[in-house]
Image (cartoon, rainbow, N blue to C red; front, side):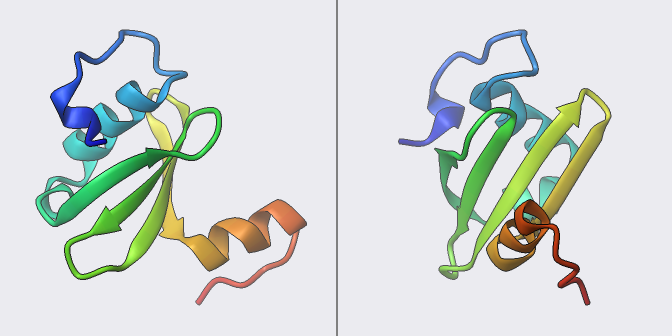
Length: 83
């Protein structure tokens, strides 16, 4: 399912709003997206046309993170695995 085909809600605490913010903040990355998937509250998983997958997390309307799945999982475990 591609969220861009569904009317987006106003509440930023849902996947559709996360897609809208992702597309606004990172338009060059958004051009390369094949599919979006829900990834929990305020978070979406993004599959790009080249097969790479990333997580976009929206904490507040202007506070977001775009990271690899490994980085996302390391943060959940409290590890530092960036760079």
